[in-house]
Length: 114
Image 1 (spheres, helix red, strand yellow):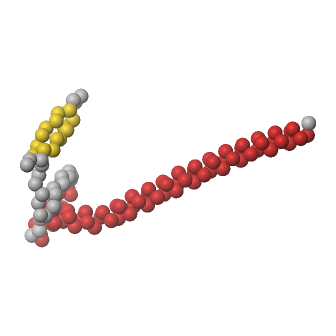
Image 2 (cartoon, rainbow, N blue to C red; image 1 turned 90 degrees about the horizontal axis):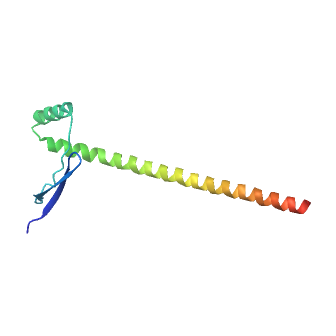
Image 3 (cartoon, rainbow, N blue to C red; image 1 turned 135 degrees about the horizontal axis):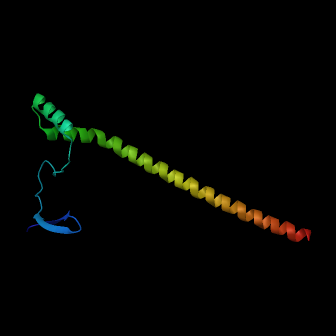
């Protein structure tokens, strides 16, 4: 059985669909591609050369170390946005109740006094 993955390559005003064979699972994990600037690649290569380890080892370590903090920051931001939206909704609901209540009180006072 051959798994086919369709890649969409965007061009100027058009899309080209290319079928490729899906990469077979590997015991060490799946491949992820990332673009890095030359300075970062140079530093990574120098570290790998000094220690006799691969780029991949250090990329895995760096991602593993950074990911929990990034996830925590994301969820803190989501929670803060949710809290802001909730407070905003409650404020608007309260203001609507107050303005509607004031009109009702004025109508009652005006009707009673006439």
